[in-house]
Image (tube, rainbow, N blue to C red; front, side, top):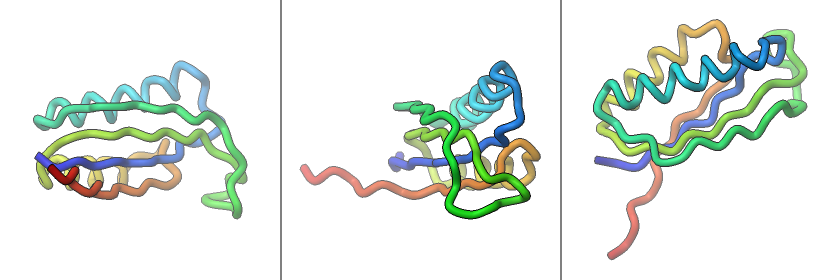
Length: 98
């Protein structure tokens, strides 16, 4: 399994419970696809450098996980069609040298 991290920005106008539900939805998706979530870091609401989909700020979340490329592809597919996510970026982390 490879190491990945995903940073996604959630709409700022969601309630706290809805924001938590969105984060849970994506972490659950990773585990359902056979991946393993290693870290979830909620950075909170931050101002963006420029307007994205008419929003000037967003709720930032970083998730590190281990999984196959299929897990990352499915996560990207769901992030792409989610109305609650403004932006996202999935990157593959370098393997640790042994």
